[in-house]
Length: 410
Image (cartoon, rainbow, N blue to C red; front, side):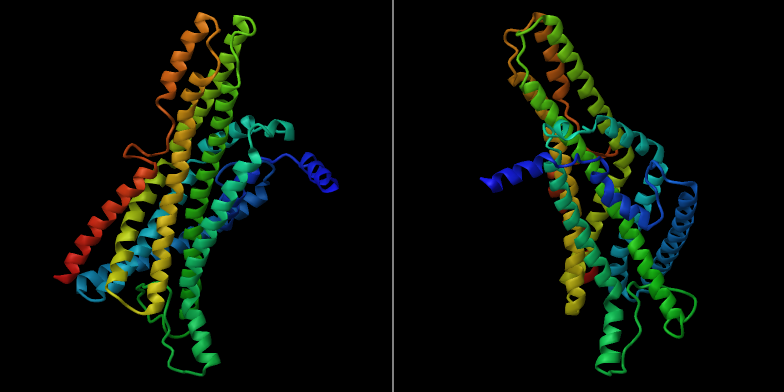
């Protein structure tokens, strides 16, 4: 009995969950590249100036590494040599290009993103009692589990690539005493000097590591920020549906029922507009995700089928797995948004409206009709994102894979 009371007291004394709890992972990864995705309250000018120069340095380094990789692929294809290395580099290049585009696009959308976050703050329940009907802790817990698995798996992948040759060098040269180690970089590149001699090797190795992490941070931050905002939208749609289903019309005056409906329609409209703004901000990012994932799955699958060293195959499997998880996670959140938004129409139909005023019942038809066009994530105008998109992506990836495999055999 005492244990039950202790648990009950601890739950009651629980502090309210702020909106920043949903956004903190994305904020950390954006800060790691010196970027503020939206205006933060209380951030001083000195801090913003420092982050600005860090961001510029990170972007210069990232694009310099990208340029050396592109030159390597161009020379390999034009000379007809190192075809396998070139196809592997294409996977990396696709990953970097998408990261670059996502960072640049979110940076351009800072004003719109700030407005969306402020709107979410206005809608967010502030006290513990207000947050209970919204199940804020449940939604935050689910989002955290997905996010930790998502960025943890990608960090393992990128640093497995980045540190592989460093660990190999330490084991062979210092531990085992094998002096036949050949200096290698994490990613194939071309520069107009011999990078394998002198201190140039160490500078380029560190540069590629920093560039890889910067690209990954930009990708992870954009995906997790979008999923956090979608989670908040799903939370509000779910709460709105429960609020409608719990209403019993006809118990009070028709004016009070119409007032209830007015509040519901205004709340629903705010959520729909927020979803449109989120699509405007992340539409290009979503399109980049699905196009790049298709090519990455294709090229990585090709590399795996032609064989190779076991360590390379393990890293390729990790890369392929990460690409699949990225697509599946985004599609899962998009499906949740679609289902939660669509449920508004069902909630309107299910609630007790039988004894309501005629005007009230007629207005319900308009709400149901609007809810039949549910909110969804859109990769610009080209693609509506849902779980069905995953199967379409796999079909497209297999077609590219079959074409590449045919070209290699010939």
